Amino acid sequence: MGAVFAAFLCGTYLRVGALEFRYVVQPIVWLSYIAFIGSFYIFDLYSPFKYFRPVQTAVEIFYSVFVGSLILAAASYFDRSLLIARPIFVMAVCFLVLFVFCIRMLYDLLFRFRLFDKRTVIVGAGPLEYEVARLIRRTSYSGIRVLGLIGVASSSHEKKGSTLPILGTTSELLRVINLHNVQLVILAMELSETSSESDMIGTLFNQPVQVVSAIQLFEKLERSVPCRLVNEHYILTLIEEAKRKQYLKVKRMLDVLCSLVLLVVLLPVSLLTVLLLSFQDMKRIFFVQKRIGRNRHPFQLFKFRSMIQGGDGKKIISGLGKWLRKYRIDELPQIVNVLKGDMSLVGPRPETDNFIERSYRYIPSYHAIFALRPGITGWAQVNFKHTTSERGYEKKFCYDLYYLKNFSLTLDVSVLLKTIGIILRGKGR
Image (tube, rainbow, N blue to C red; front, side, top):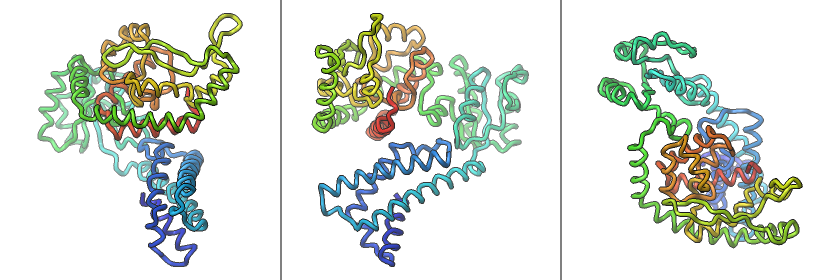
């Protein structure tokens, strides 16, 4: 917001020759805060863990400012009171690109020199401690500097496969904390080691260090909940807490309201799609399939058909279908599912009976997703690519668990903005 204000102030100064604050409190400037901040979020410029690449960042800033400018231009067309002197606006936009780029570069420099990193040790006894170390290493700007590992037994001193040193065992933890001036302790305990984790928390209770679990770390850095680290009690608690959230009622009202607006706004796109599909196959415009929704309630999901019968009898994605999927247009009929109450705009992806039965084999707690209405888009879809592997589905379920635990108006808006970014960049599957 500060960059937007400074950009308009500088644009005014260059055009008028003085700091005329009356120009930077006009309605168009207030609207620009929403337009530009929203477009910055769409292009992921607010991500704290995103690695800074000068050319890529400059392109993303340019596109985001361009989208924000289009929004403001459209608003000015419908409301003439939003008009502002064109030279001031053009110069403000140029300054905005420069300011945002400089802010991202400064952010990169601060974290590249690791001035604010917390001195950290990881306590664990199995592969999880190495998995946590890899998560920190691959996360840009995590703010964590791992000094080494703490094993729960003396045998941990002989562990191999990591470049991190073994600093000692849990019996030596307090000595290690004092010796290395440790600020953060990460408890990377497996489910079978719950009692050991409780003992560690008790030991560190009066120490001047921050203590987090592996689950909390994954939530912060990856925005997911690793399903192999949670037990059935944890899942049941999540489900019950989700059902008690007052936001569920608000979420349903917003779903209906937004769906009605989208139905009207996107009607021309839907009619054009129907027309194009009718040229391809007059009788096969819509794809209808049974899916499983909230509380395992079955429903019929609607999509625009994107596949056709190939010469060998197999179904293949048509040329038009590739385009529909790329921009997520094939999913527009699901707005009807939202209005019927089968789905939400944001939520876990609805799946078929066969897929769910297969998922239970390697994800025993898969039933957690039935606590919420499935969504047209979701936290898993915007954070993880399309996949057909068991490992990939398990990873997407971890993102669904995070959404189940944290769903709110803020998170839903975040998902919708990220979805818009995916659509604008044509990165649908």
